[in-house]
Amino acid sequence: MLVRRLCLLLCSLLLVACASQPLSLQEVRDFSVQSVKLTGYAELSTRFRDTYQREHPYLPPTADKQARENDSKRRALYGEFISVQKTLVLYMQTLGVLAGDARFDLSAQVDDLGASLHANAEVGLDQRHVDAYSSLTRLLTHVIASGYQSRSVETMVRDGDTDVQLLLEAMINLTRYYAKTHANEKRTVLGLFEVELPFTKPQDRLLATLARVHYLNKVTEYQLVEKRFDLAAQGLSKVALGHQRLREHLHDVHGEELRAQLRQIGADLRRIYNSLERDTI
Image 1: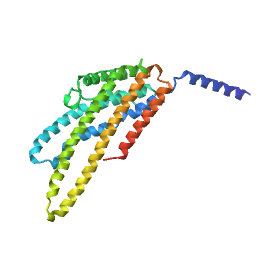
Image 2 (image 1 turned 90 degrees about the horizontal axis):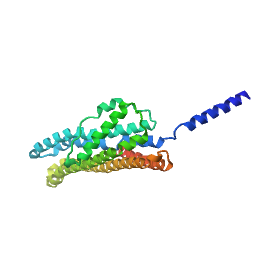
Image 3 (image 1 turned 90 degrees about the vertical axis):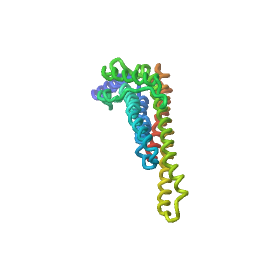
Image 4 (image 1 turned 180 degrees about the vertical axis):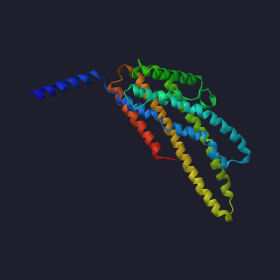
């Protein structure tokens, strides 16, 4: 009898404890984890930076000087472009911590946010994006340095949404700019084969065969990269949509409507990420 009473008492205490806890924010944590990947952007940024290394063997000597200058510009810009991603990754990790995900120790990452950002009309960055970058960086520094005091998922989303949406817009613009750079590289590389192969001599048949194989491999590579640009843009748009849904449901972040929407967006982000993992270059 005593054992039964103790068990009943323990169950009652557990029920009270559970009732006193906030409802699950599992979907918010899931969304933040999937968003941290910011699907494909880092890889495409690196590919953009390294354009000259790939196109150099196919360039005519007269074009090499300009190509080297472009290479220097791309490498100078890369630090800024990747710092946008670092800031958004840190924001999403912070959101995950506030939703109850204790896996991240973010204090060291505040110092690694990197270069300042400058407006650049050519690549699709304007002063709105620059201001959003500075604003979100200040917000993250304050929140993490204060040990998340007085912060919740709701306050973080309310204070960060405008800047987050602008930086995701910046990343989508940059992804489009990377795609234009890729298209120029593709024309340079494939154009060499398309011009030279028809004029190969019969005695150079082996060389021509090897060149055609190489050409087809490059065609396949460029097709895969173009698919990755599409997937990256889709992923960034899904992250923007998920954060928008959070902003729209700040009055009820535990509600089933928001949870269902975040589950679907999380599933979409996983699908996009899996597609990128499956189709490697």
